[in-house]
Amino acid sequence: MTMISKAAVGIAVGIAGIFVGYCFYFDQKRRSDPDFKKKLRELRKTLVFIVTGRRAKKQAQKASSKIPDLRDHELVQKFFLQEVQLGEEMLACGEIEGGIEHLANAVAVCGQPAQLLTVLQKTLPPPIFQILVQRLPMVGQKLVSQTQMAEEDVE
Image 1 (tube, one colour):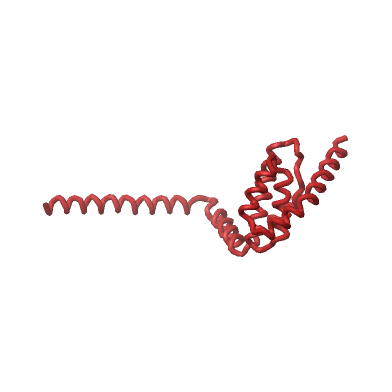
Image 2: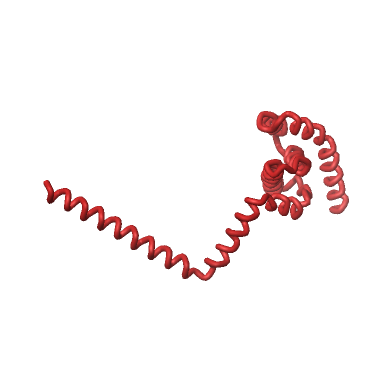
C-alpha cells in the first residue's frame, strides 16, 4: 500500500514539475516577443484610464457624436454600440449630462427605440431616465438636421 501512495506522489510531483516547466517556457517566450513591452504599456495606460475614469472623458471628447450616414447599417450599428458604451461609462463616472447625451444619441439611431427605452427605464434611476426622455426631441431634431445637411452635401 505504501508503494501505491509513493507512486501517486511521484506522478503528482512529475506532473507539477512539467506544469512549472511549461509556465517558465511560456513566460520566456512571451517576454521575448518584440511587442511585449508595447502591449504592456498600452495595458497599463488602459488600466489607469479605467481606474481614474478619464477613459470615458477622453473617448467622449474624441467621439464628438457625429451621427453617421443612416443608410450604412454597419456604421449605424457601430455608432449605436459606441454611444451606449460611452453613455454607461460616463454615467458610472458621475457625468450625468454627457452620459444622457450619448444614450439619447443611441436611442435616436436605434432600430427599436421603444424596446431600448423600456430597458433603460428598468436600469436607470427615475430622475436620470426623465432627463433622457426630455432630451430625446432635441436629439431627434439634431439627427434630422445632420441628415439634411449630409443630403445637401451629396447634391
